[in-house]
Image (cartoon, rainbow, N blue to C red; front, side, top):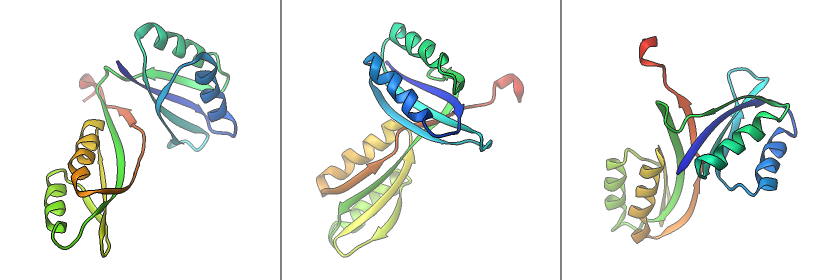
Length: 162
């Protein structure tokens, strides 16, 4: 099962190395890792996606909790949350296929970021399944380059808080 961990850490050099090192030393694989400052410049949020069973995940969380720089760890996999990835993809697009590609990308609510003589650069955000679907849809046209982020996620408000 894929799990999403939201980890708040102190924002200073070396923290990312410590967290990544913990995973590496224990033989845990990280599917994706996104790190950025939060609304508090002294705190960063790490969104870590892992494929592991519950027992291994429990060990990862315990080990993360022992790191001095870790402020808070939350497994948000089953909690109400918003999660997104960003995709930037360059695809072959001559005059004959360009309209077809643009029409298909409208269905996904993707945006054309650049129009070249022989290619289009498309930008899209969404859950992993949407990003994967866009990539699969564009494969027949010829993908020239592809860059995507890992998952970023945030908990939603609790229903009773509204």
